[in-house]
Amino acid sequence: AQTVTQSQPEMSVQEAETVTLSCTYDTSESDYYLFWYKQPPSRQMILVIRQEAYKQQNATENRFSVNFQKAAKSFSLKISDSQLGDAAMYFCAHSGSARQLTFGSGTQLTVLP
Amino acid sequence: EPEVTQTPSHQVTQMGQEVILRCVPISNHLYFYWYRQILGQKVEFLVSFYNNEISEKSEIFDDQFSVERPDGSNFTLKIRSTKLEDSAMYFCASSELGTAIFGSGTQLSVL
Picture 1 (spheres, rainbow over the protein chains, first blue to last red):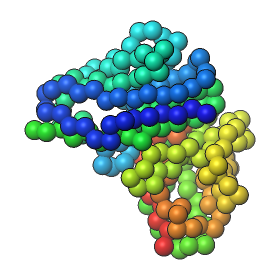
Picture 2: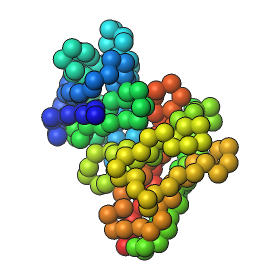
Picture 3: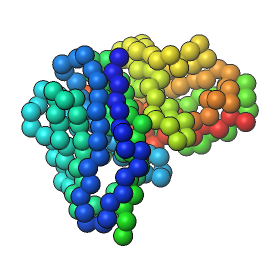
Picture 4: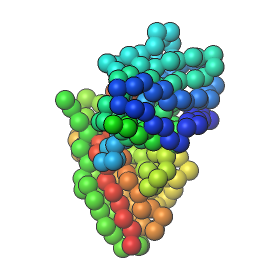
């Protein structure tokens, strides 16, 4: 069974600074996807970024980028130039051959003005 | 941009009552899911649906739960006899090529 671990329940960052959220996972599969979802106070689940395991290149979406270390089973999210609107709960998730998502417990990000 | 639509946004029910949560997935998606999130906890997988049948289900998805695709667009989750511990946010999601897009959720409160 897949597991996803987020060891940082809470993080804070100063506006305009950079923050990195950590995630590790465990899987026996070689082909899978990894995701970061953002959940603001509205509780909607918003896709931030996705990484295919077969791709060596780290995914990037504007101010969001990942550091994917397949051998270490690590998948961290870097947010550059943090904005007040980035404040939310961030969930790391894994999807394998069964397609459903396994989520971590989340990291609550606070952005300080 | 295509989106997953869920109704209602809030549902209040009495313990023991049946509820049906409704979802309209993105039209060209083939895989449909239900997840739930108890307040303050992680998002948990309930069930996945493909080709008009359940493809995977979790331990949470017991005989009290059922899913249905009654027509070409709707996807429903029925809870037969609600319990207090069923109070949660229920998310529908759909996917085509591995990326699940979530609806905005139905907050279910069981009194």
